[in-house]
Image (cartoon, rainbow, N blue to C red; front, side):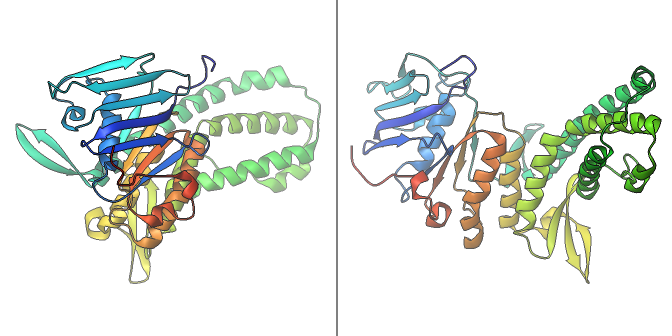
Length: 369
């Protein structure tokens, strides 16, 4: 393992969980998705909480939730050969001994809890319930602002230096005009996609008029070649964000009926519902069922706030989801993992989440220690 190789968890073992169970979990490092499957009460959710607390900055604070879960010994093995072992002190419920050859503080762990629709916040010493889907729309608005600011700064810099770069390049030899047209066609497809998604308007960037390429002389060729290079560079800063946006739209909209999610630069995203034969923007809470809100929140969580090579823990992804959506969840997740590069552990008792991927499943059966 080199210094540039990310540290990952490869095995988790817990003995005496609730005084009953001994679970050994080998993570699927290749597909990066591991499914904990089993009946209620065998400790699926508790294992997720233990992992989340182990890597939390306040792990050794006695208020940490890990102290409330009874177990005897709990160990984590890492891909670099290191390990962390936590042993409960039987005489003090709030005291644990940590034995480790290498503690993986560099692993970022995020728990996506089963209660996803609302978050509790304290405002002026009063408890308030806030809608998560409204929060995420606002967060996406800020992400759009950030990525568009980067795009605009690069665009301004390239536009500012364009005249001098043209002078430095001219006179230029005319190369393969067909290759230039191919690049222009590719850029037109990319620009059309950005128009359709809603990240860029036609007034901000327009399509190339391909018919003009047939009458390009050497000077025009040099100008067009440089302009195409600049446009490719400008749009490249949007690539990762656009890939995630497209995945969010595609996953959500292929499930929704008579409604769709759309990206909106001012609002983050909006929901359009079909009324009287046409689509109109409608409030989230009026238009979306709890299952639809769960779907947007879960997919958003997996696409945007996560750092590469994190460990993501998902508790009960099947909540409020129709069986057909449960069957589709794993393939959607594997598609997201490919572009986001993180490891996932799912806790579920739904056989439809597992589907035909038994190879990703670790069965937590009712085996006593």
